[in-house]
Image (cartoon, rainbow, N blue to C red; front, side, top):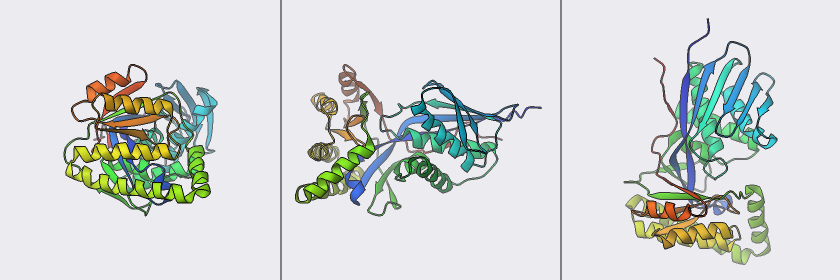
Length: 329
């Protein structure tokens, strides 16, 4: 008789508020979990196969967990990597073959919102629950970070930590020390994103080359980014809207100065400001991708103005991280 268990877990995406690129050089960064989530449902199969379907992307395939291989059924070879996160996460949660994995996305892939981390974290929790394994959130975060290291070769713990724990975090010079910030009230943020995607590795290398060629110019910019992030930490805790917006605008100018801004991002950044945002900046590696706007009371106007030429939506901080949507009795 087929096992009737079905488990669904969800995890939020993330956005970086302050500290892109400078964090590579030991400077602090601030990031927040966002209320756009990934949902992963695991259910049993009658055969001995493991099947994954990500309907929102038109991607599906069969996984061989024992031999760690993927047979792509639908989707491009570039999308195979998404299935690799799922496979590694299932293995970390001690899953054996004979399960169906259905992934539903409430956040766009490739928009700098930590979709791979959210998929990984939600898969680990769903699989652990399905396999009746008790994991703490700390264990889930650690396992998810290991998956990202396995797949990417290098990864910050920021994304997987936020998807697991939720909230807003401050990353200090110690990359393993994440401080959760107690933020009073909401963070009215709009995210705009373009179809153009920057290559994170190439952009990090570009900044490194500039730093080596002109340290007397680039190092003070990185120091200024550190001052911005530390000032933003205090402003966020106090709920000082004016300072948050000011520092966001300064941070964007500094990122522009190191060469990771684009015309498309700038158009969204200044459109947001012209429609009432107190601050706006690119978020993530740059070179395309996403920007954020801090716009108390003006979210609808900013979303509408950006949607005239790109895509935008309103978000808030997800105070809750990974969770079971249908806990088993």
